[in-house]
Length: 151
Image (tube, rainbow, N blue to C red; front, side, top):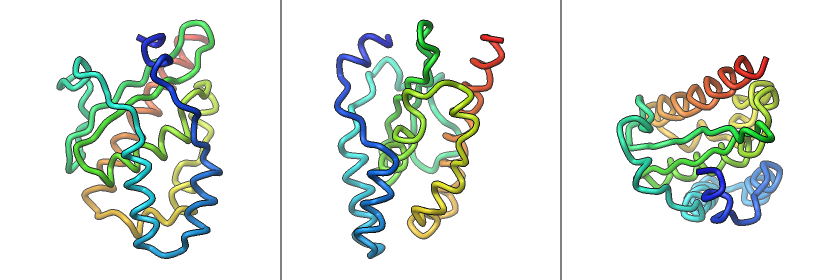
């Protein structure tokens, strides 16, 4: 599966790119539009992963997520999709934060600080925050399991 994902990769957008753009835009509406645009740029998740097994619970919308670690380099390969545009944008931010990172780096990242710096709380409803927390917990749980498996 990892090889198939890599074939569809585009140059990764970094977290710093996103932060810089949010700061440049400044305006809340422009930031929301940018977040939606980020989500639209995500590659589609293969239909085989749009099952209950890969669904993230707690989300207001439908979200499916895979959190695979490459057996050779032990780096996270994060893929996800949502049927809500704003959530797809949040997924794009999570991909920029976590994709391609080793498990300890995933666990060490202060994601709450990242979202605070971006002002995401201003952009999403409390129900969306629950879904975001569900996605983050799925990612952190996978990283913790990978770290323990490699110990």
